[in-house]
Image (cartoon, rainbow, N blue to C red; front, top):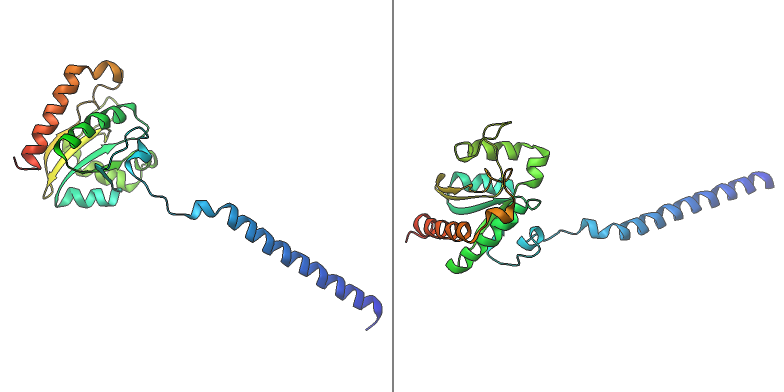
Length: 197
């Protein structure tokens, strides 16, 4: 082998080594950079509503909600963290939960509804008799809403504010009278259908 071919062979090895080292360095750099994205995020109620820091809610996903709607005894608050109506509802509902000293489930429909995935349609189908109709569609699954379920039967539901939100501002609707009426209704129905008082 002549000197020229040895030189080419060594140059080629050097290039391969440099490429390999660059790939390894890029892999290490990118894995460190994107490591936080691979960490499992803990979602709690304050992840959705920053100013409501409470332990009165179990966060559930659509699959769990569908199971709960079929059996067991549950209270489910369906909200949308992008909605001021859901936030106002959550504040008042939290007061009720604290007074009754109970914990309920929370399902945030924002992602499923925006993606219009099968879970959204399955939940909507399961709750079809307890939803509100709007101008553009029947049986819309909207937030905020509250359901008390016992062995697959909806014992009580509250969709009080989903029908008024296009006509009224949140602050206008939640007067002291409406707030106290809502709290009284929610507490009475939780006692009746969930706590069996």
